[in-house]
Image (tube, rainbow, N blue to C red; front, side):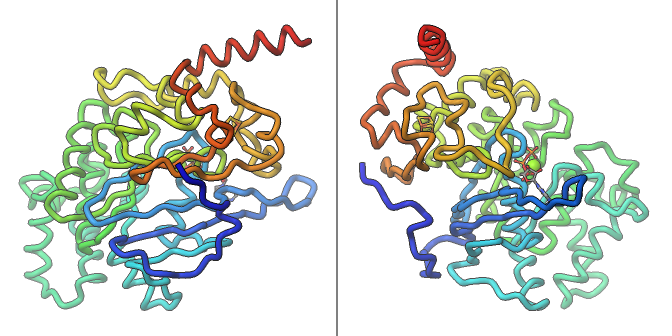
Amino acid sequence: MSEIPHAEETVAVAVAEPGYVLEARNVSKHFTVRGPLGRTSVVRAVEDATVSLKPGQILALVGESGSGKTTLARMLARFHEPTRGEILLRGEPIGGSRRARRAYHSEVQLIFQDPFGSLNPLHRVRYNLDRALRLHQPGLTAAGREQRMTELLERVSLTPAAEIAAKFPHELSGGQRQRVVIARALAVEPKVLLGDEPISMLDVSIRLEMLNLLQRLRTEDGMALLYITHDIAGARYLCDEIAVMYAGQMVESGPKEEVIAAPQHPYTKLLIESSPDPERGVGDRDELFAGAGELGEPPSLIDPPTGCRFHPRCPFAMRECAVEAPPRTELGDGHWAKCWLHAKGRAGELAETTHAAATAARRETLQGAS
Ligand SMILES: Nc1ncnc2c1ncn2[C@@H]1O[C@H](COP(=O)(O)OP(=O)(O)OP(=O)(O)O)[C@@H](O)[C@H]1O
Ligand code: SF4
Ligand SMILES: [Mg+2]
C-alpha cells in the first residue's frame, strides 16, 4: 500500500493518460446562492473529484442524495463549467468554442432521469430523432435519416419502428420513452454515455431489460458509460468499477467486486450493508439509503464538516478525522480510499465488524463517557 499526496497538493497538468476516453481531473463546482436576506453563500457541490472512463468501461457513481453526482455528470456533459480542475477528452483539454462544444457533444451524451422532461412533448418521436440526426450527421439525406431512425429504434427494441416514430411522447410508456431518449443519444454515435439514474423512474419490471440494453451498447459499440445510481444491486449487475461520493467528494473507487466484497471506507461499507439483497433484484430508491438515513441529515455543503466530511456520522472516527482531510490510499488494482483508518493501520477493523455494530459500540462508548 502506498499513499499519494492530497489532490490539492498535486499539480494539475494536462498530461495525456493513455487509454482514457473521458476524464475529469480534480474538478470542483461551487455554486453561489443568495439567501432570503440577500446574503450570498457558496455551495461546494463537488470538491476535487477525479473520474476516468476507458472505452467499453462501465463505471457506477453512487452516493446518497445531494452528494454531487448530477453536478459531476453535468460538468462531464459541459452543462456546468468546473470552478476548478479540467475535463479531458482522449487526453486533450476541451475547447470552449461553439464548434468544439458541438464536436464534444457528438462524443459525449447525457441521459437524464426523467425521459419525459428530455423529449419535446409537442413533437412526435420522428421529429425528436430527426433533429438530433440533422444536427450531428449533416451529411445524411432525408432518406438516409429515415433509414437511420429505423435502425436506431430497432436497436433499442422499439418496433415496429414506423409506428413508434409516429407517436407523441405522451403516447409511450415510461420505458418506451427512455428507449427513445437512448436512441436519440445513439443518433450522434457517442463514445461516452452519461446516464444520470436513467432507469430509476421506470417500472421495476422493465429495469432489468434496460440494464441489459445498456450492457449491449457497451459490448457491441465499445461505448463507455458513467452510470449514476442509488442502487448497489444494479451497479453490481452492470458495472466494472464503482466510485462512491459523499458530500461532494469521492471517498472510494475500485473494481466492483472488491468494493462490494470488501469496502475500504466506512461510508461505502454503510451503503453496501444497508442496500437490499441483490437476489431480490433492482431495488427501490428510498429503501437503498435507509441505513444512511438513520445517521441523520447529510452535512451542509455550504459549511461542510472540517477534516473528513463523514466524521460526524462515522463510528470509526478518530481525533485527526475532525481536523485533517484523510489522504488517498492506493490499495492495488486501481482500488483506492480516502480514510484515516488506512494511514493509522486500523483498516482491518472494517472487515471485522458491521457498520451497525460499530455504530452501537460507538454509542455505548459515548454514553459511558458522558
Ligand atoms: N444550480 C445549483 N445551484 C445551487 N446549488 C446547487 C445547484 N445544483 C446543485 N446544487 C446543490 O449541489 C449539491 C449536489 O447536488 P446534486 O444534484 O449534484 O446531488 P446528487 O448526488 O445528484 O443528488 P440526487 O441523488 O438527489 O440526485 C446539493 O446540495 C444541491 O442542492
Ligand atoms: S477518515 Fe475518519 S471519520 Fe472519515 S471515514 Fe475514515 S475513520 Fe471515518
Ligand atoms: Mg442527481
